[in-house]
Image (cartoon, rainbow, N blue to C red; front, top):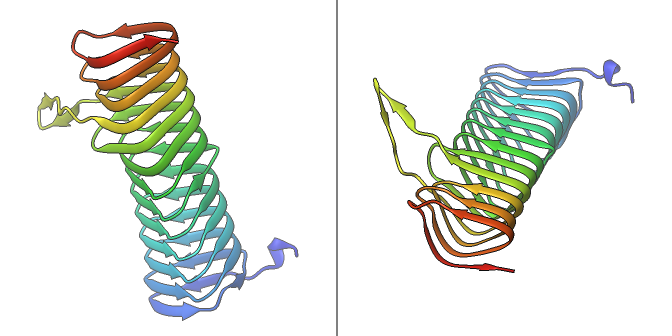
Length: 238
């Protein structure tokens, strides 16, 4: 079907509609779509609920959006609040607001400057965060770059390059160094550089344990460096 020949679905004010195939779906005000949607553009500016799955090229949530199925798209931008109750498959995922995923996330690029909660695993080629996140399962990416700015938790973290640094908060005219820590059970990668991290096990080739880290066991194959302001209970070369 030629997507250019599809009609648009617009819900303004208070209203509801059935799903289907559309070119563009726009929800302004308070709107509900009662079944699956397939469209080119999905735009939620008000309070929108989809009682089904959404397949689209580009999705944007500026208001409060809820998808009760799964979402599959090339680009998802969340500037407001988005809740996806099932899985998210996306190429480019940007969060400046608040996003909650009830299942797993599979993406190429993830960029977080707001708050992200994922109940299951989170898999990407690149994962960059300067904010808060909670991942209930495994966070895995070729390149993990995290600048701690608040509470950050993941059950396990895996990747080729893993960089975790502390970013001081700017409050008023003074910088306050809030000693937030990333908490995880296991970090495993090739090159690992950590600050403000609490982990039971860290395993890799080249490992740098920076300030304010609390590590139970470090296993390394090539190099290990430990800052004098870090705590490592046990380390071994394997």
